[in-house]
Length: 193
Ligand code: SF4
Image (cartoon, rainbow, N blue to C red; front, side, top):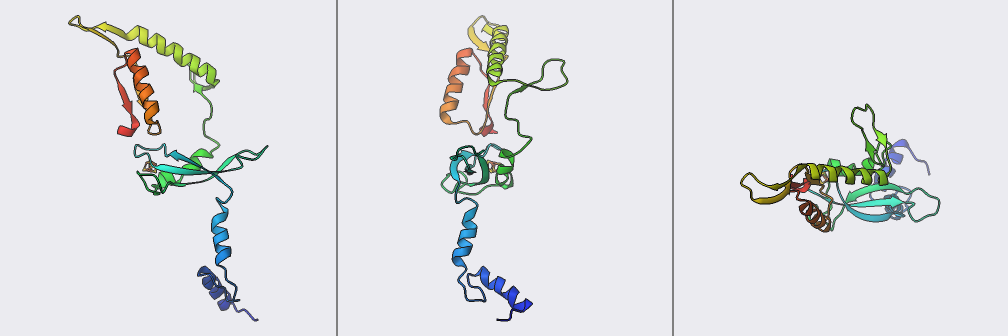
């Protein structure tokens, strides 16, 4: 069978609707091609961290169940079962995979000491230790037991809590309990912005 350039192009168009000029049904092949990207991935449901809308996403990871393989996120899409976005994502959310798989992403705590001109990597244990020490020090230094009228208030105005849109209801419940126990009165969450 002689295939001209025009016939060859037409075969490509015909292929797009599932039948090549050579008579082969290409539908299974197209289905396979469309499936390949996520066919062997693990699906993890999560929340887009970019803004207060908090759209639901499905993160597709490959290699997270194999030995000696570094897991890699290969695709992120909107969660069709999520009540907020029902599968849709804005351009920022659609590019989430590039945020997760990014060489410049910071994976460990860093601190810039007073007077220093650079950031220093520290361990998670050290970060938690230092945060606890500074929280205690700041809270004790700014704790107010009575107001100007002499009424007992037991509040701390020198600390502030700001949560993120990916914080769950349960996490926020614990945050409020913990902060109120310390007397912190100023609480905010990105989900309200
Ligand atoms: S997908 Fe867009 S609208 Fe939805 S949470 Fe992310 S940034 Fe906000």
